Length: 137
Length: 85
Length: 93
Image (cartoon, rainbow over all chains, first blue to last red; front, side):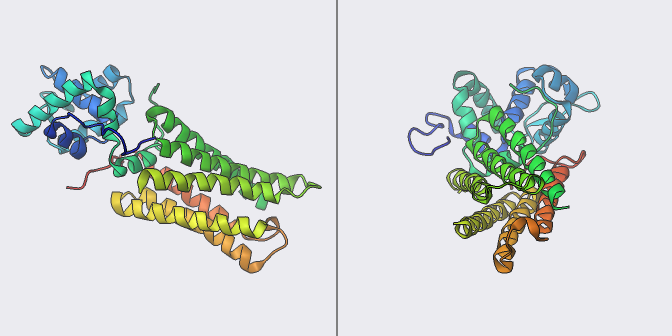
């Protein structure tokens, strides 16, 4: 059960990383899409390619990609309907760098923080009613 | 007429419960568990109402009908207060 | 006993509806508004049952309110899954 007592999940986390998660990341899937584009920034990605890589539903990755563009974290890529990593500011880039590192070394904390806002938990309730054909484990 | 409403409500509630449990398995948010149990309780409540009409029982099961709904709803309120307040 | 249970159920539905109403205000996702409506209809059903004081809730037309409540839930789920609609939650700027 999520509790705010005890050691906070963002202890020791950089401020800008925490900010990025609070402001822009509302699900693990969205984070994984962002980190994929960040990790493989040498190329652009279409929704289908991302969904194959992450093994999720391409319609939902499409929505995630569009959302990330709106947030200024990625930008349209060379090909039509493709996106590539492209944060609007250098500060955002540093923050994504930090999230990527934290996701490697303290993944559970990052995931806990994604759900730390009651608003995100509430949205997760509504999300549960989205019928998606993704293979979740 | 009434029995088809209760049957539909029971099935729909069960469907909602399934979706919520699936979500709970996916990301472990306990609000989904509590609300899933709530819809399970509502489903049981409607199923028992359906049974009550179709199979007229000699035993009055209205207490069990109400209890299943109430327990489910109590769990939902608990989940809402502890997770989303 | 059954009056107590019915009253408790009504209170719980009313409260759940209040929470969903609040969620609607914070998320601007009408899914929650519909859920609030649905649970309040379930609460209304209990109120009417108490007012009519029927012998058995299976013998009245009060189930019509319940069918409306569940129709609203169906509407909420269908609305959430409509393709092309931006179903993603947005952080308020």
